[in-house]
Amino acid sequence: MFDYARFRELLAEREQIHSEWEAGLADYYERMSSFIAENITDSIAFISQTCTADEFVWLSEVFDDIARKTRSRAFIDCLYAVVKKFPEEDQKYNLTHHIEDAETWID
Image 1 (cartoon, rainbow, N blue to C red):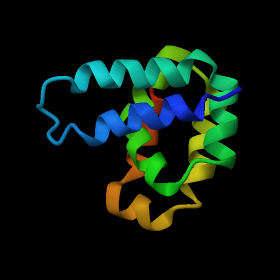
Image 2: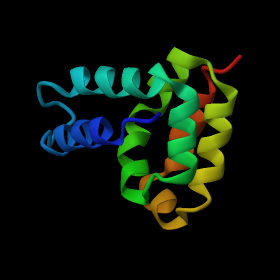
Image 3: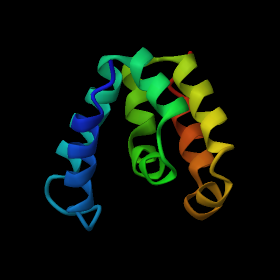
Image 4: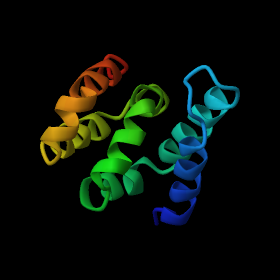
């Protein structure tokens, strides 16, 4: 089962890191991507069914790390399906580009 409370804790940590150059960001990326990759099936279910637009935007920072760790086509397919639900966010944050980058890790 997806641990939504842990996911929210990680997002709260990220929201406190204001610059991509700030100390702790690389560590955060590793922890978030490992958390999502740990049980990719449950994570895919969460992302496709429950993830909000804001959560999806934050998660996009680690799409490529998750894909690298899991090599999951189902994960990439899920991302392409979910981004269609958030066209404004896709346009503003270029989420499709993040998915395309992540897709390069899939054989």
